[in-house]
Image (cartoon, one colour):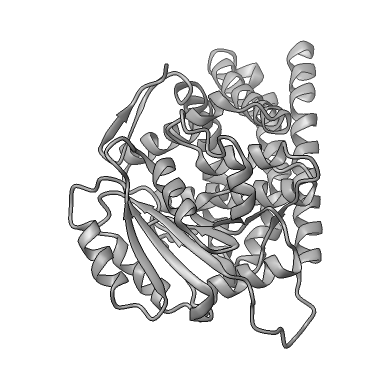
Length: 381
């Protein structure tokens, strides 16, 4: 028992320190990013929105409507929608929309030898004329002030890469959707906290901005040989550049929302895709933080299995579970309050029970099995 207690302490002390650092980073980032000018001048930055899409005919209309409603100066923005060999009416819908906009809007197409989101984004970025590239996904929505918020933040914080918030929309009475929303909020906290602490770990291409000139200087910015992870791969590349600057824009006006997975199968496949890119990570910060989180969740699963066989371990299991749940509050509490998601507290403890098992399984299978994405199958080499 003393050995198990010692191992538990050795595993959870680094986890607690990690959560404390992320919470400090969020607080530091949040305070430093607050605009002090009550009457900011209109943004001056020329920007290009790039959206890669494939078979999104049933989902792209809300995004296009949101782009039309942007209050950004029309002479300083352009939108490039890049079609990745769609097999439905996505390209037709995008073309009809683009032809009726008061700003520059174009539909581009991946060539015969180009496949995947990374190729589509690269095509759009190379064709762009904006100083700042802003990316989002075809199933996302945002406020009318989205681009204005991103540009103003950039002008106050001229970083090579800027991450902004992505949140899930969810039905109040559906645990499965709220579980995903809570998990994404945790990932958002990890993104913001790590950037604020000076050791960026993640970002989300559904709401990401970066300098076009920086992108073009990189040899392989998205790691084109990998099917997923355009966002984190780009972050790692920029992070490796001497004197790089990476920032997080916390303003609520910059939030992008999207829908969670509709069923367990889609959820499992999506998470395997997310985890699959970790096979290519080289950044020490990302690898270290990922190992700490994985081992802490794995140990809870081990203690649970041990308690089933030996009830004498139940107290240690309950203590470890309670400690982790309290430590996670360090990061989640300010985020829940800031983004006004207090209704997620109702599922906090049940989610804490589910998460270690799910996280451990995806951590193992995501690195060892394939996944499907946009009607294409990808295999782990």
